[in-house]
Length: 286
Image 1 (tube, rainbow, N blue to C red):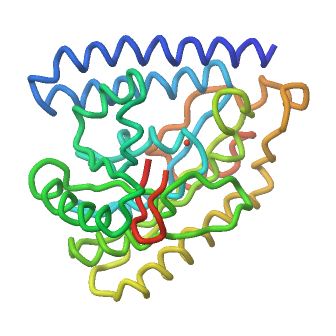
Image 2 (tube, rainbow, N blue to C red; image 1 turned 90 degrees about the horizontal axis):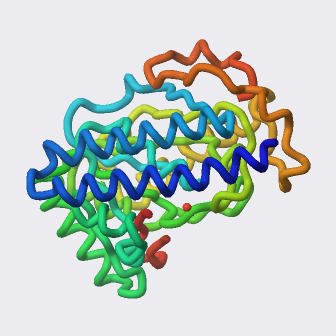
Image 3 (cartoon, one colour; image 1 turned 90 degrees about the vertical axis):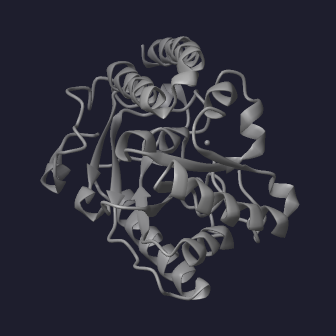
């Protein structure tokens, strides 16, 4: 039964994406005042599909740690789910991603109309310079919140971490707070569209790191903050590990229920069950 739901989710995911991609392409001349609301509709639709068909809900804790003004949103990356959330959490986000993503059908066509920094990870230090230059321009003109995956690529739970210098270069050049963001999405959403488990993803927004630290110090503090919180979220006894095959899935009805609002607080921890990178010199996100 859960396998059937997974196939239905995948089909509806791409169908919903095609409809919204067409809408965003047609309305792109109207600018971000139309594109941002459409993007939020698309992303909310994905979350509803994930809840209704896969039993995957989410909660956000620490929203009070989001600065009101410009900031860098440095987010752990364990699954494709992580790429959807910044568009729901941040009012005017910009995205750092690898250039190859612009060639993905539908997704690439749409993303080119968003505030993005698309980098060729083979360019090394040149990509790092472009990251800083485009980051300054984007933050000043269109996107005061800049989202980046500091490891530059997706890491499975338990995989060795490698935080790239790109996020520290942005922090040093932009002189804005750096917001660490941890999560445990890898427990419930595996690679691609073949490995899911019902449950509640927790995304934790940690206190921002104020500007002024050296690149080395901020990179270490960022990694320590994020990885420490990730370890806590993964070790939560209410967060069962992701099964490796459809036959090992837990009861798909466990954890299926009303979507957990991002505005709900940390006291909901008792709820039931709940996809790049630059070289080492140029960390960037999907």
